[in-house]
Image 1: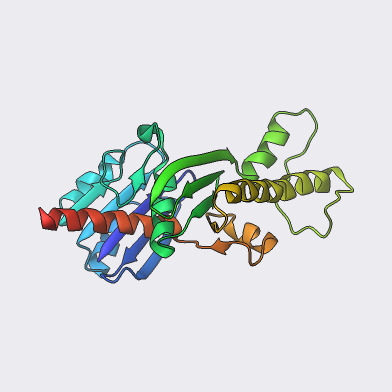
Image 2: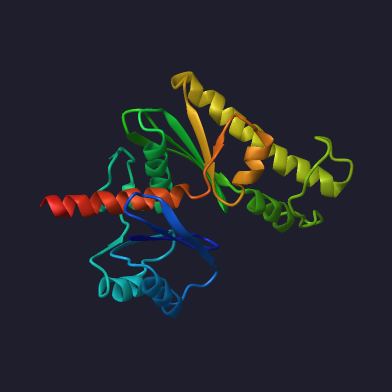
Length: 247
């Protein structure tokens, strides 16, 4: 079995995959200690593991897992991957962005795909039908936009995302909500329209904490895949294990 760990800006997500690539267990923790990790290892027959972090390097996982498992990978720009990465600064590329497009390519092989990761930031990444990844865009996420309006103005309040009945805000609170929430939807529609000029049969996958919001606003136009980054990490891990076994 494989263990995949995705350390994001706000949460740590873990998944256990079987040899067929099926997700067996999915865990989310605000803080994940070595003791809790050891319980996962005792419950499942983990042989291989991969860690991806948008933060600093995770030496503690390397020390802990590297001594216990057959394979341990800390995802970096030097890690072998099953796609062609044309990003000009691979050292600065977010690991979650890379894993997301690899996960998408494994689901819709032979298709042009736009991956939208709606988390702390919203990222847009394109991978073509031949498995070429060139990059995309990074913009503030929904919560970040709410916080920015409060932080960088004198009187605007800090509000939260809500279900809206109208596109017209009739109070300051609903004006902020409609501006932010519908603004990101219009932004997504604009990105999709622009990319479809070059990729007419483009598929759109959305993942991340706000994936359900986008899916609800764009029903039947996008595919929500909550575990996309973890699926991509599993693909990278399997690819590296296979390369090792061939050597």
